[in-house]
Length: 213
Image 1 (cartoon, rainbow, N blue to C red):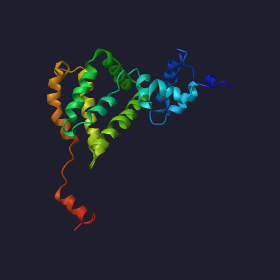
Image 2 (cartoon, helix red, strand yellow):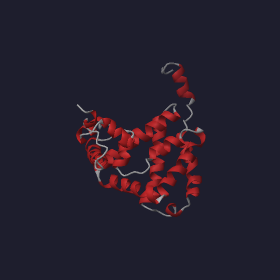
Image 3 (spheres, one colour):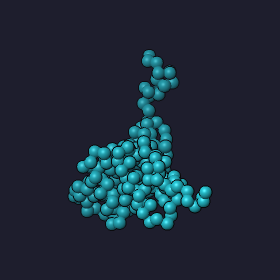
Image 4 (spheres, rainbow, N blue to C red):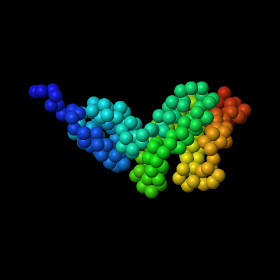
């Protein structure tokens, strides 16, 4: 059998990528981000798994393409988290604002937020993506006690800012210069990521194995 005729390898068909995207968009909305696999999408689209990886690289890349995201915010946070942790909030906020301010990358993101506000299935998908691709990764980067809660508080503050500035367009936040937003919001974002000091009482309890006096 000629290997060039193997199932799914149809690079000459321009509609193959669109076919994968159609299946992925529907499967993500029906099954959620975590449950849906690249293998199941490839099978339903009638293509090799390797072809899906060739076009989109990863599950996150496929989701970005399926939702028409030119740049995924989780990629921005990934890059921002690689440097000095103390400067992470400022870097992350600066880069995310640049993403939303840009006409080409900002429009799909606004549509994503608007869709989540009006469609329960879409909202569940965005929530899952945020938990797995944003909160979990930030928690792993900062580490320590209550890392998940601190990462969630960090993301909640940014999400609130995004909705206020780009969806509700509330003043004066909507018309502030990005640099001013970064200056005002960086301190509370740093505070959100900082682990609260343990009280003398809780430290004593831990040292005593959780026993009370």
